[in-house]
Image 1 (tube, rainbow, N blue to C red):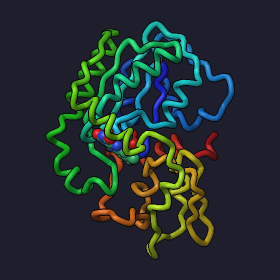
Image 2: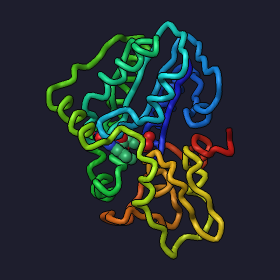
Image 3: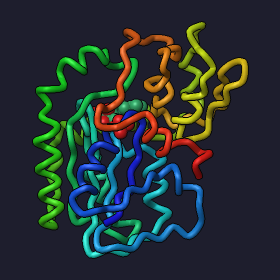
Image 4: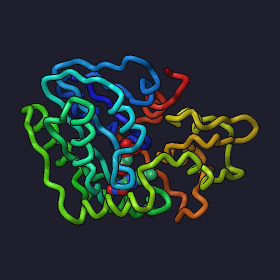
Amino acid sequence: MKILYFTATGNSLAVAKKIAAEENGELISIPQVMNGENLNYEDDVVGFVFPTYGCMIPFVVKNFMKKITVKADYTFAIATYGMSSGAILDEAEHVSEIAGYPFDYVNKVLMLDNCQPQFDIAKQKEALPKKNVEEKTDAIMKDIQNRAKGHPKTGFSDKAGTNFCKILGMGKPNPKYDNSFSVDENCIKCGTCAKVCPMANITVTDHVEYHHNCCTCQACIHACPTHAIHFKSERNTERWRNPEVSLKEIIQANDQKNR
Ligand SMILES: Cc1cc2nc3c(=O)[nH]c(=O)nc-3n(C[C@H](O)[C@H](O)[C@H](O)COP(=O)(O)O)c2cc1C
């Protein structure tokens, strides 16, 4: 089993790790391989785990899905999300069909919503126990072990959600998204923000510089050890990293120097 994943704050990696552990699967971080040539993935099972951005697949993941080849007896995609996943599973099926490896199984896991500034992360943390993340992840894990096939139906309101996000221009690359960030005097120039950025979009010298190649994932904001990076309109300085995932694992997943 090979699992290709994308993560900013560890939710998707936590799910990927759990699925992989059952079958001694290999975890492959998309940012570590996405700029390579001849990306061919062959195994008994090949799966994807990624977050939902604007009720759609993050463009980094979608572009990767389109450019690789996959040869497997069983393929799956799991989207993590925080409030509404829209029609993301339909999109995953569509993209995989075009790419030549239609997913046998798609599903989604409701987790903490890490999107600043839309959500108050403190309130998200309080609400998390009600989301039953473990039960849902376990059920998906069992489905995959059983090589279940299935595509949950997407309702009208979910389709409308994705359409609305498209109208707002979400889902398209927005490289200057980093203009919405500011760095305050608590910055200790440790470079963590640069290491967790999957786009190599940040350099740290005597100051932090964003280079307008942002993929909107917000890993830098959440991982900063002194909470010095802010959305200009954020609600508070509460931040998130999934407790099943260490900072080191996020860096291993995203640091472009690891490539
Ligand atoms: C830019 C951005 C957009 C997001 N859009 C959505 C969304 O449309 N619907 C949703 O339910 N969650 C949305 N989220 C929340 C993430 O999908 C969710 O927290 C995910 O589990 C994060 O995974 P990660 O920790 O692996 O990065 C968004 C997060 C970000 C950063």
